[in-house]
Image 1 (cartoon, rainbow, N blue to C red):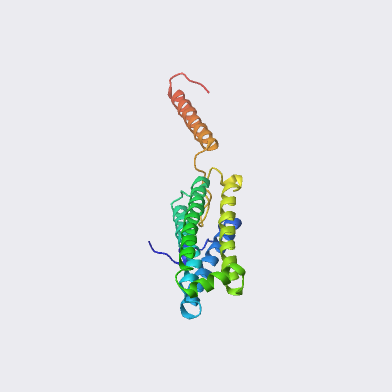
Image 2: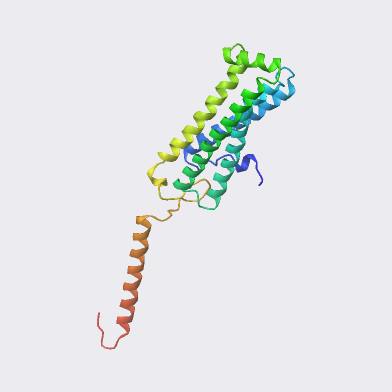
Length: 208
């Protein structure tokens, strides 16, 4: 699966709320990558406890990146309707919950890994380091964006309820629903009536 910014960033033709949600989620994912790089380079933060503290956010960011790609791919196929989008958001939330359980277990384990790990744990619990508080707030923002995506999938505008969510430069196409069925039935009725009139006109002695 090829991932790039072009397969993740929403196009300008997308609904504005969806573009905002996608952009914010992708921005937070990029911030996660920058944080990992910073911790790897800086010897002070290159500690098991720090990466245990970040592990749930890292795994959640990977999942979010994959889900954003799947949203775009489904949109390209014309299958990203309200139900599909809701399923993807639900998968994000459930997956993030699972990863945060793993992260909690890692944090609990690494605090006993060494005296240094225990010192980090004490600082984390008492808010002694501003950097650790920043890490905690990054988790809060991550969950906030997951909740916003889920909320939007539930409160999506009515015009996207039965149709495809437009993520490309194509017109919105209605998928199913009573309106589409009635339109097809009406078109079929008109076609039958036109055929009947044409056959009647060919009969001998018929007058308009």
